[in-house]
Amino acid sequence: MMIFIGLILLIVYLIGTINGGWFVGAFKAEEALTKERTSEMTDDEKIKLSLKLIIKAILISIFSVIIIILLLSFLIGALNVDTILVPTIVLLALFIYRVVRVGTSKKYREKLNNRTEKEKRAKTRIGNAIYVLYILYILKLLIV
Image (cartoon, rainbow, N blue to C red; front, side, top):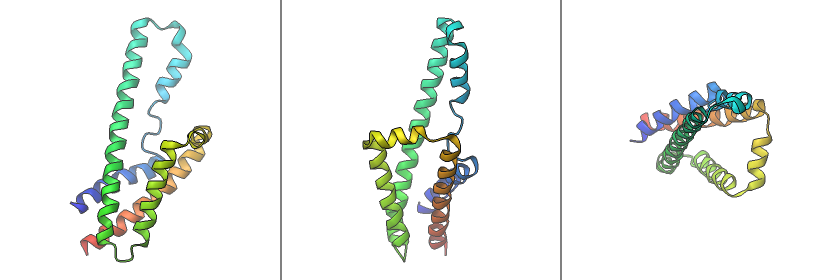
């Protein structure tokens, strides 16, 4: 089961590393559309656009929660597999810190929103690359 979860996470984080994030540009087309044409849209078009955005947001939220649960279960399961334990404990602590900080700190969320797109992509790529290397390390331990 750990190998299966590891492969799923590896694919997700590889895609995130290559694209610079999981959902890069997910709402850009709709944002541009709403900024340009909101005043000239009919009520039906506004409702359709709103529903489309809501459905996208719900699907992205569900996917994110599933990935968070998979990553947490993988990190906890890796405690039994990892012989060194330092990488696993560091990533587990970092994961918990990030979840708590994003969930509780308004200042931190505002800081995240104020970063440029280039900064967001660079930091996301670095974080995803770290997770890819860690997942490969644990998969190597599981397979060998």
